[in-house]
Length: 168
Image (tube, rainbow, N blue to C red):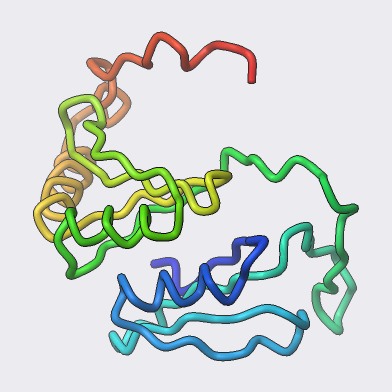
């Protein structure tokens, strides 16, 4: 189980408020990296998302623990890193909230296996939101994969979109 993860945003507080809204969580300051916020969901699992100011990176710092640095303004923030987040909110409500912030949001089919609401936070990075019906599809798929004699065959029928292999 992943208990929390970290992302960055130009508007960390606005992103934190969005996640708290769709998760049913609370936003708190995150002092180790000034200007950062953390969202907690009271689910008994410690589910959380840390949102750092854009350009924040973590570097090894020995036994005291990781240190925070900031990249230069204007650095490309696109990344293959993303996550799926189950919520108790209907897909239409998730999309409405994302679009109200000016962010792209789409319902997407993941190879016929399950659906997600792609929310492009600040139109820069991806979170796959799973409303209850989509979460059930995902959990069914993930469970089926673990029971296959050869789990590597699970995605054999999943073909990439035509633009997947295009240069960015």
